[in-house]
Image 1 (tube, rainbow, N blue to C red):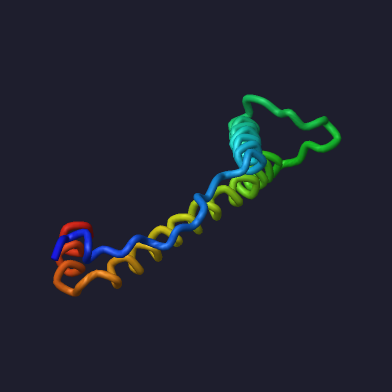
Image 2: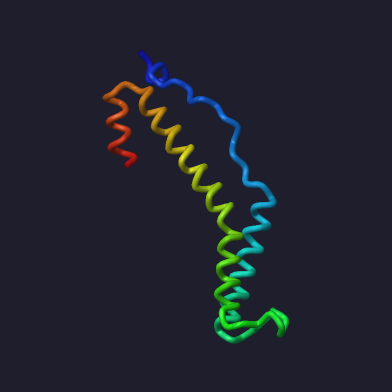
Length: 106
């Protein structure tokens, strides 16, 4: 019995790609967050005088974080998917092989 006979090929799924829109939204969020920190430090205020108020820097930081969240959630769901595939793969192996792999990988 060959070792390759013990391993079943994993279920194939198309690779998950990060869309360009989410990357642009993430970069915009980082920029807005940077502006928010600059406003909080008193170095720069991009808002028109009519819109300036005491919590403008904090508001810009929060808006920047909200812009960055979709990419974070996409990466988090991809990690969950990979972990699920790993568990399915380990469950398909004989118990002794699965136990040996778990000891060396985790």
